[in-house]
Image (tube, rainbow, N blue to C red):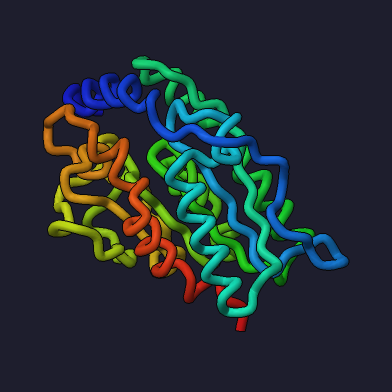
Length: 244
């Protein structure tokens, strides 16, 4: 991995320790059907250093986006929605190997969760939403498991360090031009058939999802918390999650 990317990551992981705080996640949000399977399941993955004890273990950004998706589904008559967090380690560290250990654990937990959903709830629509480190976990997991990816109706990647500016994903219309640089850890692996069902959010100036050589993480830490940004991301995800 290029030295400049390692340096960017080392600074970024320390800065991100101030991201999103909130409340614990007790389980799903809404009552499931008699078979225990909701109409829609939203699986969320928080960013690095975000607490498991706040914002339902989702982090500020994923919590806001999934709430808005659930609200949009409810307006369309879909009230049986479950939101669950992947409770991976997400340590404050400037050591790449520690960061990647947490990513590896998250990938195992996400694969296990999606395997269980596939087996138990084959008719449930599935959305996976990840921010920052969580987006990396989601991207790499689903790229490595195309069988699981086939059962994901939409993948939402927000501020991803593995962003590929050339991938033919749906890009959310956010303030400023679309960034042209890849993520700080380089473009991630191909998502195959899931590419067309993937939504990407990267705001101009976010050096994690579009590395420019600078170390100002203000936009990455705060821009996706804005209600207008969360609303735009949720609106992009809704069409693929609304049961027909």
